[in-house]
Length: 138
Image (cartoon, rainbow, N blue to C red; front, side, top):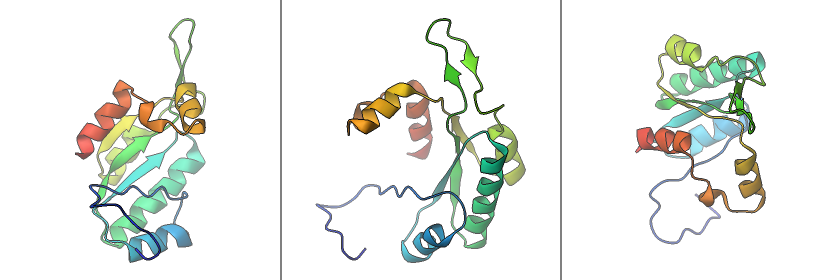
């Protein structure tokens, strides 16, 4: 990449792209040597529609789809532990099955993650669900 100075060799570079099939994802897929895409969705119908288009674009461009993660799938009540599907029921398993890509995980909406991101300490986030997702990618 031009305009970036890396220190040493990179093991992995993650590029967080805006949703959809617009200019930014298209440019990245055309400009960077990619080992694969991880598709991130949420349970809403609109998000699922956009994700299906992104999966199709990746396949059309010959980019390997490593898998699907559903983010903000549920929130856990801190008092009783009940899982609440705030954005509707999970659609991840159906999307993965229908598109033929692996389902890497279903992640909760978690205020701890938001707080750590705001503090610039995302590396301190240590949850079993996230660890399982990354283990599948290694």
